[in-house]
Structures are given as structure tokens and as C-alpha cells.
Length: 196
Ligand code: S3P
Image 1: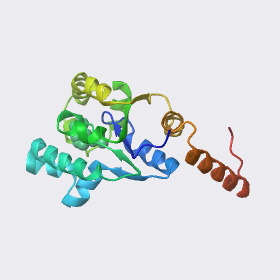
Image 2: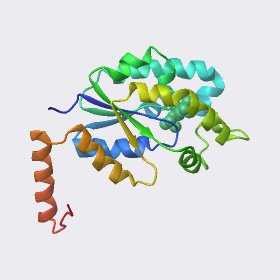
Image 3: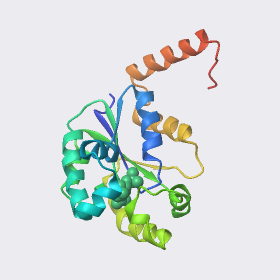
């Protein structure tokens, strides 16, 4: 079994896609791409501004174009926005030559992790928890249907999630074994011993 060309992370706001994605990319020796951040860079504006000026429909159009571009890249971990699964035309883009991971998280955790956030327009209202519940009802079946791996993230550190993911994605590939051995040597050389 060889490593997939891409690992695509899907899941709701507050699932930890960016934090886990960055760590996972490092572990696999892949590049990390975050769809929302690249949209912001390209647009020269943040997501609330895009929602304000172009509406959610404008943002979704940008998101599809970005996914189209990013899913042509190889050796990448790609973090998608929570609503990327809402457009059926995005589904083949997300799945092609990729392992799709659904980072599944309770509503309580989503509320906790997004509580102070001002960069998510859909949650800037009186009842963000109610919104998250409604979105979950619609999107959870889509995330599940698209996913090759469903990984729960509640009460787990990002590092633990990444370790579990690496074991699922590349249990015993030669490249991975080589990388782990190299990392082990580096740790020993740096006098920091790894726990197994
Ligand atoms: C959205 C999730 C956000 C961002 C936008 C819309 C959604 O990304 O794309 O605010 O519809 O769930 P994160 O899931 O990375 O927060």
C-alpha cells in the first residue's frame, strides 16, 4: 500500500481541520493547504468581507474554483471549509485520488472551539449553537458519505488524532517506516528520546 496523493480533511467548523491538517502534513512530509486561507490570500480580503460583499453564493463559487485548483496538487494535506460538501460538483474534486477524512466532533466541542471566533460569518448571530446543530443535521450525512475514514476528535489532542490517522492512512509503507526511523535517529541525536 502506498501513500495517497492527497489527504482531504472535511468536517464542521471547530473540528480542528487546520491544526490537525498542519501536523498531519508535517508527519507525512506533505505540504499543507487550507482552502479558506488561500481564498483570503487570493482575494486580498477576509471571509466575512467576502460574505458581506458577494454573499454566501459568491464565497461558494470561489470555494469551488479553489478546490478545483488545489485538488490538482499532489503530496498535500488539504483542509476544506465546513461547507465545501454542500455543492455536489465539489464531491468528485474532493474524492479523486485522495483519502478523505471526516473529522467528526460533537456540537459541544464545536461551540467551545468557535466561541470567540469572529471570522465565521455563519456564526455571528444570537444562536450559534442552533446554527451548528442545523448545519450538522444537513452536513453530517454528506461528510460521512464522502469519507474513507471517520475520525472522532472529541477529548483527543491534535497529536493523538494525527498519530491515529497516520496509522490508518499508511500503516506500514516503506516510505513511512524510513521516515519514522529517520525521525527516531534525529530525536536520539538531539538527546530527546521518543516514547513509543
Ligand atoms: C463555513 C466554514 C468555514 C468557512 C466559511 C463557511 C461553513 O470554514 O469556509 O465561514 O459553511 O461551515 P471552517 O470550517 O474552516 O471554519
